[in-house]
Image 1 (cartoon, rainbow, N blue to C red):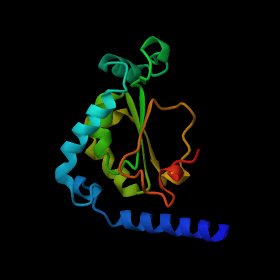
Image 2: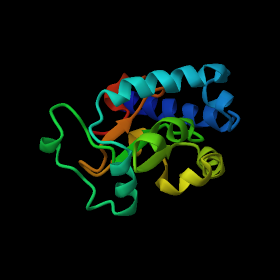
Image 3: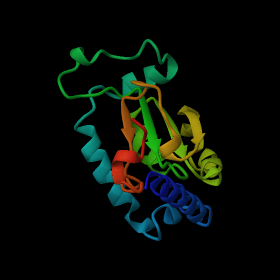
Image 4: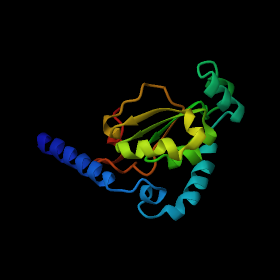
Length: 173
């Protein structure tokens, strides 16, 4: 039974990778033909995310210039808030979320996506602000293991149900 589950999982991820290779590297492609909802999605996501952030833009700029000195201890900024130094965009595609949501709110962003062509396109799509993208990781989320406590926010939205067992298997523990 276990080998069947593992094989099914491998097959699932292989099919997903093949699917994304055929998708155009555009906002419309990233949203499955629903590119017209991008602004609504970004604005709603920003409103949601800002409720959990603790520092303003000056701290983000400082973090980009001197990342190790800019981290503010959580105890200084109130309960249930997180910093704005580092974010990870999971299933980043061409960087739609990175460009319009994460870069305006965070000093540095890393991107991870299974499709190399999307990450290549992201480097031009992001424009000048793309210089604050530290890493472009090309791998499936099931194979990505970020260092513990290396991100203030890990943004995972449209791919949250993308694993065969749902969200519990998208990123390894």
